[in-house]
Image (spheres, rainbow, N blue to C red):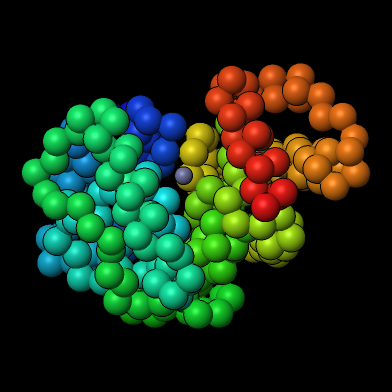
Length: 267
Ligand SMILES: [Zn+2]
């Protein structure tokens, strides 16, 4: 499996599917594992890495949102706690999330050595910047709806790490399954955090992590440009030049996402 980064404290794994990342943060008493995914061999690989480092440490799973690519690996791990947003339980259409997971699995005849189910959180992010205290390390939970209603993000100040979920990707236009207004607010929240916090790593759900605030600000600019063009197109009838999508590495797939966004904005 591809590893984007491996240091004493941090491993960023990258799946061959959608370039989805899983992040491991190794602190003194706790191992944090974010969105473990996707293919069975990849999950096994991540599992081995966790076991190599675990010893007597607690394993805490952090989930950014209930899309199938972010929840698929949870049940492969014998974890102590699972943190995600409150909306993951209260607002997300759980039946649909499970159906989407099962449908994707079946479309590739994927076999696993564990059962798939909707993860049961032990702790919920109920407000922005809510702090979860794990002795030597703290996690700030963030609420970032817009991509999905239950989207969240994690700031680990002691590691200078921000994990954004499906925002700020360098390979994907915004995917708006929830709503545009919330998406824009979440973008502003990220912009504020990136401006205020001392960060070494900004880790995104799909594509490459970044160590550079300048580079992330460029991404934000491009993502906002898309949001503006989309809004002008859907609400003011302006032409959307599909050439814009060629700024991303998979323009054919981006076109499908774009058409999905238009449909969602019009509903
Ligand atoms: Zn995703």
